[in-house]
Image 1 (tube, rainbow, N blue to C red):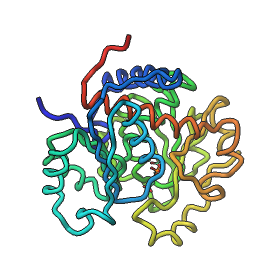
Image 2 (spheres, protein in one colour):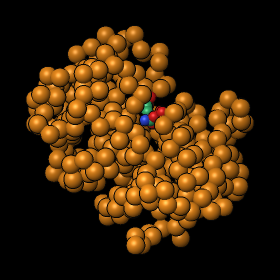
Image 3 (cartoon, rainbow, N blue to C red):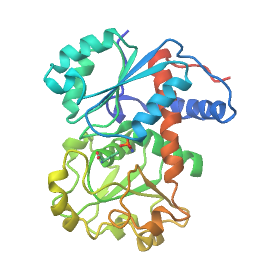
Length: 307
Ligand code: CP
Ligand code: NVA
């Protein structure tokens, strides 16, 4: 059987996400009831970080332990990965000593080369192009708060980055709309986002127009990891793309606000919004743990019947 990886959102079909969201609910309920659930005893997750992380490391490491397995953290600073060992060689070796690997790196191409040489499933923990685990958590959070996302409208305000690209892919897979507003020169590149052009997204020069009537308003940092040299230029270019109370007021009355975090209050979002009543960012962050437990279980054991 070919190994299943989760390298970008569209690697899974609609019915697989339906399964994973239902499974997440069950796994989360067990966790909340302090019920031990150890389907991955003796399994080892290797986590490779070429960029910083709080949530991704914590949620994968805690998640694997809660499923009965163990997790090993590697970074480029103190492993051979940062000293030019070919990705293909690293993949051969790491995948012979572990059961599943999560990677946070730069170009998507790196994770694809790793996966092509791996004996075990690979999970994308963020690349320059995508952040699929984040959007799984975001959509699960939307479902928890408001029900199915199909047919809904998501407004993305800010940079057309890895998180934005993943929302765009998710809209095609799960059939909802994404309205994107970026400053001029930072628009979505359909090729980079890996879109099929199914009409699930629209771009708006004015962020207010993107937010009007939206069910979910979301944003992210103006400068992603790896692009720090552009920070000064971006601070000026993005100044009008700060999600504020006015944007939330033109969205639907029951719209929720999400942010993958870490956030910069006063830049991409005001404190009024992120700390306000429509914000679900803490549930969103917590749900990284629960969706990724369902994801690891699925990649290692396939579909498990929920009792
Ligand atoms: N949202 C997210 O991936 O956070 P970290 O960078 O802290 O992992
Ligand atoms: N777009 C951000 C997300 C961080 C979780 C980055 O890539 O830095």
